[in-house]
Amino acid sequence: MRIDLHTHSSVSDGTDTPAELVRKASAVGLDVVALTDHDTFDGLDEAAAEGERLGILLVRGMELSCSRRGDSVHVLAYGADPANPALAAEMARVRDGRLGRLAGVLAKLAELGVPVSEAEVMAQVGDSPSVGRPHIADALIKAGHVRDRQEAFDRFLADGGPAHVHRYTIEVDRGIDLVHEAGGLAVIAHPWGRGREYVLPSSVLEALARDHGLDGIEVDHQDHDSEIRERLRALADALGLLATGASDYHGVGKLDHDLGCNTTDPAVFDQMQQRLGSR
Ligand code: AMP
Ligand code: ZN
Ligand code: FE
Ligand code: FE
Image 1: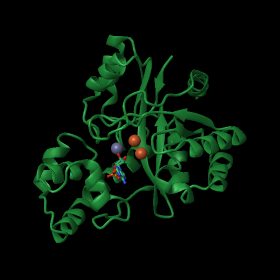
Image 2 (image 1 turned 180 degrees about the vertical axis):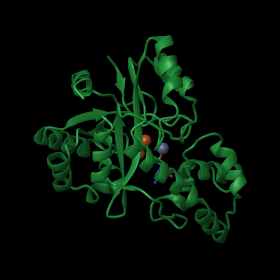
Image 3 (image 1 turned 90 degrees about the vertical axis):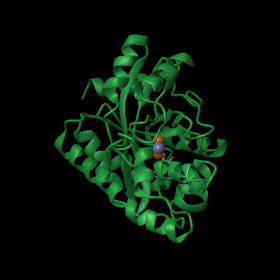
Image 4 (image 1 turned 120 degrees about the vertical axis):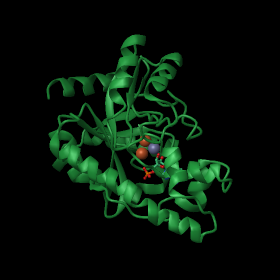
């Protein structure tokens, strides 16, 4: 059993359509794949239909934009009800914030000497309801200002970078509660990736587990080196959290994140399904 619980399609900032993503997951021998687009459930029906056709299980997921003290935190939601009013309203507010920050980012990029227009960005966004920095990066590539998404982030778009603009996100404890209210499981994505241990130190993860019933943490992720993975695995054990693993695949949008490059232990996935079944 090979299980990859975190991937993105072109419904947010990945580059494969939901059906293409599921076909590729099947082709690389995955048995289970979760589609977890940023702040939208829109790709799930298409992905699930393709999964049924190919005999690969599609887990209905979503990656919710949260924060703690102004620093970004991503919460993976599994099995949450898209029709839950409170969650849907907050997701809509987050997506509005994604669009609302665009003018500010574009003004900064123009000042920095790498102008792109809103139309150029929206051409990269396509029908995605979730406008992301990777789409801005793609417009910068198309305009010849950078070679790839990574260069766009490193020079301009990364958190705290010269073209970064704050956007609305949900307080992480509230985000976890919302996912639970919608009947889902809440797992913190790449909790200590990119040097972010200070955002969610173990004491905070412990409090989220104790006071908000956090279900799990993503341990095996490309943004975690082997030392961080070991420390997170030990922490998950100590706190009774599920330890997941996943690729965070974005198609050609993110190198070194091939489908199935990290996977989740089938025993952990069993526990997730049991918890979802009892909700
Ligand atoms: P956004 O959703 O607009 O906040 O952008 C987040 C997306 O950009 C996610 O897919 C991240 O993986 C990607 N991202 C965020 N920070 C970086 C970074 N420093 N380098 C590369 N990609 C990043
Ligand atoms: Zn992304
Ligand atoms: Fe993420
Ligand atoms: Fe992701």
